[in-house]
Amino acid sequence: MLHKPANTHNPIDIHNRPRFFAEFITAKEEIREAQKMRYEVFCEEYKVVLPVHNTWNGHPIDVDDLDDYCLHLVVRNQANLEIIGYTRVLTCELAARFGRYYSSHEFHIDNIINRPGRFLEIGRTCIHPDFRNGATIAVLWAHLAKFMQENEFRYLFGCASISLEDSGKNLAKIMPVLREKFWAKSEYSVQPKMPINPLPDPSLLIEEQLNTAHHAAKPAIPPLLKAYTRMGALICGEACLDPEFNVADLFVLLDIKNVSDRYAKHFLRTEEAA
Image 1: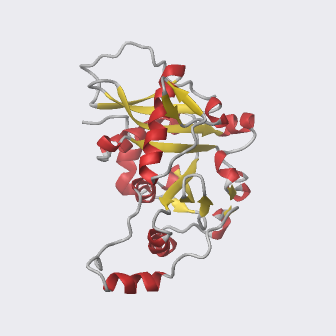
Image 2: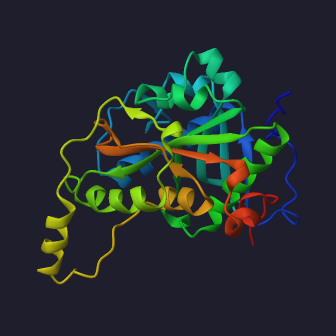
């Protein structure tokens, strides 16, 4: 049976709390605060102006119909209890109530969700720009891992985004690396509903780099995608275009039984941060 998220209104002992801590939130005002950060981060991160469908205290917020069905997990800074990290969690039971997983509007995912085992989807993951130091995402993953273990989830999946602000040049450099090192077997493949074609030719990009002062630059892999792959997650197919955010989304799957040894202590630990 699904364990209920922690009560967010319990007294907080600031002397025993780590510097950052994670918790599920349920109060409307707290969720609105998280949605405000979502809007700010996504606009800044992908340099897009999102349509303002809703506001809270005069601020635009990122909100959609799925929010009412999801669990909302945040990381807080103990010093002032500010929300500095966020992801929304859709369990297989909640997805059944909603009618689908979020990823299914971009990918054909039956090949994944028809497998045996319990599934958990995360989305809208974002970290405040001032706290992208590794500790915040580590606390987020740790709390997710604890939740997965307590509720016997086998798989975690979601979409990791790559900006297309540069007309797909960085995506074209990243994809060969992903195909070589992190590509899932065919039985785990998904198909994008809006493929991105054509991508710039990677060989032409290499030639372009050699003719500039930035010839040594490596592909800029986004932090979330990097965190996924370091833990042992697989990329399950080609990217899908998300025109609203002007990004390429990749479907990422993590089997908790295959978490890499190097990161198992971080992912499968109690929620702590120095």
